[in-house]
Image (cartoon, rainbow, N blue to C red):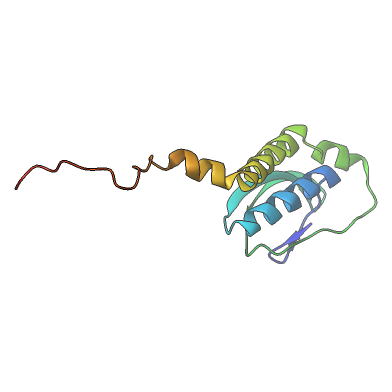
Amino acid sequence: MSYADEHFRTSDAVAHAVLRYAMLLAHGSASDVVRIPVLVNEEQTWAEIIVGPASQITTVDVPSNDADDELDDAEVVADLSRRADEIERARQAPHAQVEAAAPPRPDVGTYFDFPEV
């Protein structure tokens, strides 16, 4: 995975989850910070990256090794998937949320008794 001229290794599942989430955020002109397990100079660590409309993230398949298994963090993938699913649900039903929040409109011709000032 490459981000902001930095290159680090993560699992396929984490990389795909980051890309999906970044794409959905970009469609909504939003951004967020994600924390993912990475391998840098053969050392396992964590990276925090900002994802959203301006993200320039690329991924490249590389041969896997034993260290990749430790980078496949199911909790991180589940969290990113949950965040992405929330965005998709909100995009699928935006009108329902707006209609539910709108106050009822009075019928045309309704008489309002305003107090005199």
